[in-house]
Image 1 (cartoon, rainbow, N blue to C red):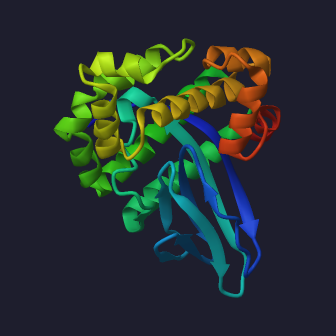
Image 2 (cartoon, rainbow, N blue to C red):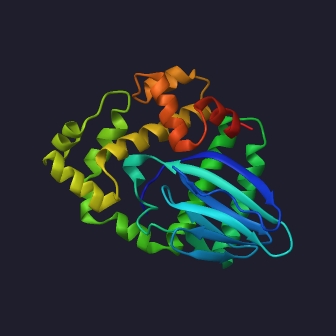
Length: 265
């Protein structure tokens, strides 16, 4: 099993009326959703997946989806938004480029842990609570990996392993300017060759990987610290707070300050 550290960003339960459709969204982190009650369809740009009460799914980062409730009664869903450290698990859940559906005993175990996490998130923040949430989230991801062993097999591909030093370099130098030439030197190849390797291994460019990790770190700081937004921007490698605000809103759909308020509700 790949050693991965997880950080929960938000958790909650939402009730949607019959015929309700969520907007199309492309999240920057992984989302595990459990259908507690009712039925729904999960729409992607390529398919529609029917979901019943007790089933669940994981939406990988970058996959565009929306949820359409079906039937004559409301649909109650439970969402867990989380991410993993980039150099340990970048691309781990994107190798299939589609949502992962789980049901039966796997869904039951995930559902029980999800409900416990939601309960914990309603309590005051303590170190003990954070440790338990991390443990439960790790067990959820472990269950999904056991149900989809091809995820871990794909991550062990030699090309991905070859790029691990590049991913570690990004993680370790977030506060500093990072250019393609820096990453190419770490990989021991030309910038053009590195671009081709990253697209083949992760489906994205080196520059996009740096930006995504900066934003992941920004979400962590906004959620778990009281640092001013300008300081968050600086610690994530953005010299201009206004540019950081624009990029954050473009990628997350809300400004940094509003994001902080939403995830702490």
